[in-house]
Image (tube, rainbow, N blue to C red):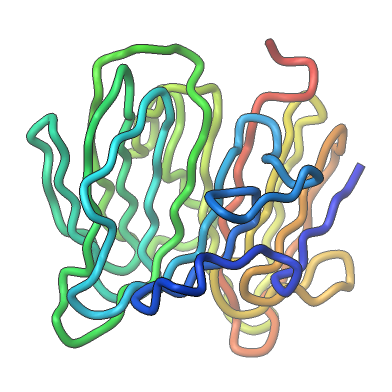
Length: 238
């Protein structure tokens, strides 16, 4: 089964927040769509643009794996566990909310916007100790493993049997990923243009794959593109 989520069909963040321009792939906050409550363990993908000097004031979460991937600008993090850091383009931040943590996310620049993806994944354990880590950017070719349950290949070790891959392709450059029919997959175009199955996918477009197998073939469109691929527990996972 293949499900499509075009960029233009996503929900919008609150219009009153003039410091924030947000697009929601799944129901979040004031945006509610019973048909888009998540995709397996993947609960949130928000594409956020935050104005210079602005951000999300301290607020609390529990029992959620929260990933932030920066596309442009710099994002400053601080939480009640004592963790803090600033990440830039191509860097991935992980915060496991565990039994509860308060955190803030702010634009680290007073002059430039920050553009990032905020991702929530449901954990495979509850009420764990909160944790934080970040992964530096890499320009290595091919599929890059950014997050995994065991932290292999320099990835961030998250608390779910899920993996996050990144791929950047130049115009016409081809790549493939072997799909496991026991897993679910969510392909999100982070930037640019990607061709899959003869269809052009652009920034913000996404495709979900369930019970699919074989090679997922991709190619860079005009100007190339960047995708994030989430490998998630399958439909029969407990």
